[in-house]
Length: 369
Image 1: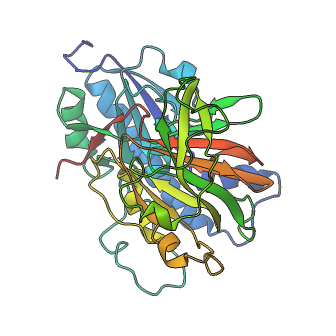
Image 2: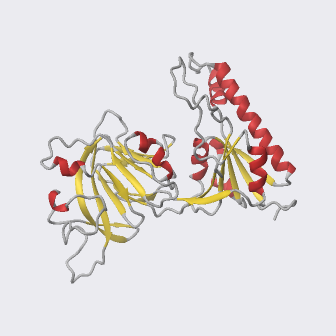
Image 3: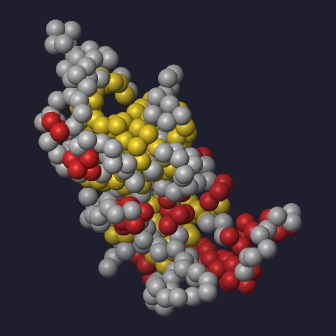
C-alpha cells in the first residue's frame, strides 16, 4: 500500500500527443498542411493539457507514486513495478496502452481528456466536423475526474475483464503471435481497391494417431459437426476430399468447413469492438462482457458461385470462445490491422492465420452508470 492508504502502489500515466503538437512539429519543418484550423487544434490541446495537469494534482494530493510517458514513447520497460496504467486522451490512447498489457495482469483506466458535449453528439449539418473521441473505453472524463479518480485510487470503481482477440500468423519459417486486440482486427489487401483472396475455415484439434488415418497434409476430409454455430448445411459447400491438417504452436488441427473467399477483407471484433467499425459494416452489437467474437466478410463476391445463397449465409457470424477461425492467405500481399491503422502486420501468399478468443482478457475500468 502506498502512503496515504491508496490501493495502488505505483501508476503509469500514458499521455496522448495531440494533433496540435504533431502539426506544430511539422510546421517548424515547413511540412504542415495549409488547411489546418490552428485555433481549433490549439483549443483541443489546451483542454487536454488542463486535464493532464488536474490528474497529476489529484495523484499528488493522494500521495500516489506515478510516472508519465508520452503515448508514442510507451515501451514495456515503463511497466516495471506498475500496478495501474492510466491512459489520458481518448479511445485511441486506451487501445495503444492495452497493446502493452499482454498478460492482462495490470488494470487499465481510461480518461477522456476532451469529451464531447451533448450538442456535439447530435448529428447535424455543419461546414466542419467537430466530433471528438466518443470515449467508449474511458471510465472517467475531464468533467468528473475530481470525484471519480480518488474513488478508484482507494479501491472503488467498476473493474471488469474484457475479452481480446488472439491472432497467430504462421509463415514459411516463423510463427508470430500478435499483440491482443481489444476492439477488432481487419485482414485485407494493403490496397483498398484490390481483392482480398483467402480460404476461411474452422479448426478442430486432432490426435495424430498413425493408425487413425489423419496425418499432416491429408486424411479425414472436411467433416461436419464441429464447426461454427451459424454454418449452413456443410453438404452445400465445396469439399476437398483430401482435407488438411495444420499446426499452430505444435498442436495439430483439422481444417473443416472451409470456403474460398474473394472480398474486400475480413473484420473480426470482440464484444467491446462490436459497436465500432463492426457495427458500421453491418455487424451486430454484443454484450460488452461476452467472451465470444464476431466476424464479417467485407463485400463478399459470390455472384459466380453456384451455391451463392448458402455461401452468403457465411458472410458474418459468431465465433464462440472455444472455436478457432483459420485463414490461408491467397493474395500476393496482405495486412492485418490491429485496433485501427497504427499497428499492423504484413502477410505474404500462403501465410496461415489462427484467430480465437484465447488472448488474456484485459482488466478495464468502466463507467459506473
